[in-house]
Picture 1 (cartoon, one colour):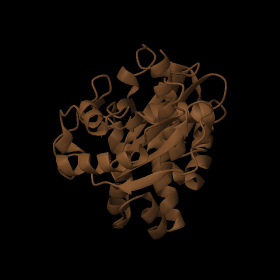
Picture 2 (cartoon, helix red, strand yellow):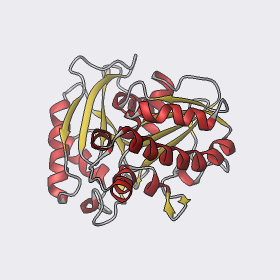
Picture 3 (cartoon, rainbow, N blue to C red):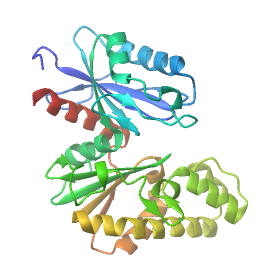
Picture 4 (cartoon, rainbow, N blue to C red):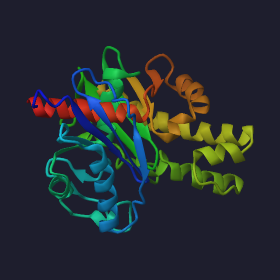
Length: 292
């Protein structure tokens, strides 16, 4: 990296937002401007989404910043920077587009892409609540379940001890896959089927259900999570589990149940940095790529 370039633009792209900040890649501090967030509708057409991203990023760039690290949700080919989203799903209009080359041409900057769960895990491991000895698994719980496997400070994706590409969202579980059971839509469906309550997320569910209903809901969720994660944790020999994402903000209901289930075999912690972990992780991974 050009020694004159002290800052890198770190970006978190989600299904409903784009957030970014300038990070000093020498000491990993966030520039005084802080994190800037803009709403994005992932179901818009290709040109609207790309224009929104481009305008947002262009406002953050300057002559002293020419590198961008983007934490991107899957499915995405991070080597070729090509979208693999399915039509009709979030970012479906971007399917098979070479997002990397498009943004680089529009912004005249070098763009790096990383899995958003990997960015979260590295961010927490290096700068937040994941600092510890031993292997760590970072889990993001939101519109889906994201995962990262970290050994000695490095993301592990190609090992017999982790699922293919370090992804668990598509692993079979009960009558479907993990994404069906460890996501916002599970809470929405459970509330509707069990209690006749129409909610649009975990926060609104907490506002609408009584304490007994909440206990039933989170008990079912945590029991499923324990059954699903236990063999994964054991195979990777992970003693540290860090949870992030919007669902993890219901720590009050999750923590006691999960700690009771995992007993003392696993140290369970909740994100200390939240979205900042993703941005710091993206910057750290980009710096490694630049220097390698």
